[in-house]
Length: 466
Image (cartoon, rainbow, N blue to C red; front, side, top):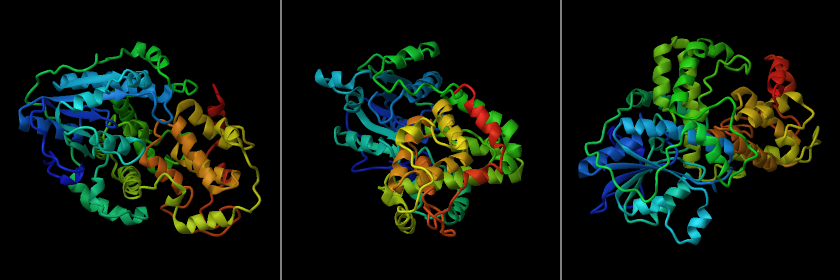
């Protein structure tokens, strides 16, 4: 089989890829790319279905038992489903969304999952490639249950992750390789319509939620109801494009000078939409390049492309990217050797989670996560670095940061999450001057940060409505 853009590097396969004889349709199983346009995985599914003369069916399931499942994440996904249903219909593609309230009850009755039931009828399953969280395990699990080949397609990077034969240690290392490849990959992704539009019978009644019904649907799911939906961020492709337009109009022109100020709103704030695949990075970069000016775009491209794809490179090539062992050896030694250094304070996991430290700037950062589900990139670095000095062991600090980020941040559970958190411990970085607790790992001071932006205004803004 071939990728629709002619680049085989987008395909991640295991075993034979020949379609199963007698299959009724090609199944596109949505895991992380929650958009019906500019979607390379969907395009591969359409191309395979057209070659076989059968329809393509898009299946999207939402279970309640994934790690950190909550009202916040469920709501964002269901809001995305509203747009998906409309956009798949516009492309003439059958889309079935299944909301599972009680997987244990289904298993007690001996019923197969809708995904397996559909995959057993498919000539081929095409799904989203994603190098972290539960996605690799889920994809491998389906491959072991059905005869149809299961092909994962990289729709989340601009330059395919497989383009890089090895893990790059720094942004400086990967940057020239990305820039050299960019002209080949940075282009609009086509949106073909399938040749065969025959509808097939689904083994469940698909749900198309009305926006007003989403709170009731979420309340009926066995998830963490203590993490409410974000009051400021709505899910879906339409919300993603609205946010992109606002950034191009109001933020891009100030990006170089003001992106580090959490009060300025000069950053894109697109990371939740990129994480859930509501919008493609190709679309974002092309729109920003057209909007300009060149100086601002070039810096934005470097932040959005180089650092993001470095994180995907890390997650793809290092199977242990979620663990303490993924921290560079030199940094692990420095931090471990400093475990006996006196701490200014030691806080419990609960005190950190609920912003009960003696530093109001840090508390404001955590309140941003608790309330809105987002954290400005600059203060996220301050937030992460501070926890290292408030835990006796650096591995405990890593564990706490992963939990807080993934539980509350809408852009959590992502390669960029692990890239950003591990950066706090020395990943992608170099040794600096030695100091207590951190050794030669870069230190960032909450006190010094107050001189770089109006911390009082940020603290007051995060306290409002808390």
